[in-house]
Length: 194
Image 1 (cartoon, rainbow, N blue to C red):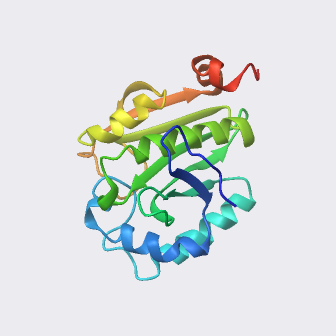
Image 2: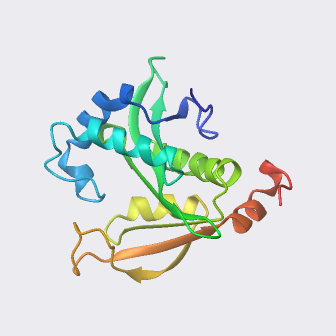
Image 3: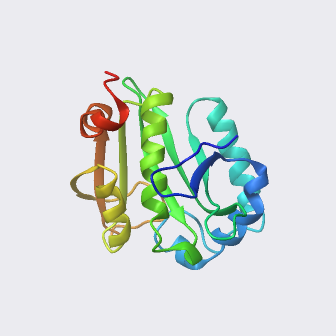
């Protein structure tokens, strides 16, 4: 099942993550430049994509995560996985979760991360009952900082990331976005759904 379109960027759409995406994800995630600014490990394990996909599909069934392959059919017309995006750690009352994404190095600078993040925000606010999102990026990752701002997130400060991969020298910019803020900003696109 595909969700079309991901945004107003023609040729980009999101597909719920599945084992069919494993080969492409394995190739893209194995690039050390992905690990440099995300929670993806390096070196990426030989079975990393399959293991992660199985895990996240189980988490989706429990309502704790929703992850998607970011797919492009621009240019050649053939569907190509260009990255992943998702919301992790969905919990609490009201429900909140952590938005994350990465785009494979060959596809950087094309607007895919912004298109995917905008579509993902719409999906989790409209279809998954999430009331608030949070996200973060390394201070040195200015492209990701801009993606979060373009998606409507508020920059709320700086801090550390709880993932064990990052140490105290790895400073993160912290962001939040509430469903009400998003609805207000997108009233002309989503209608009044409050």
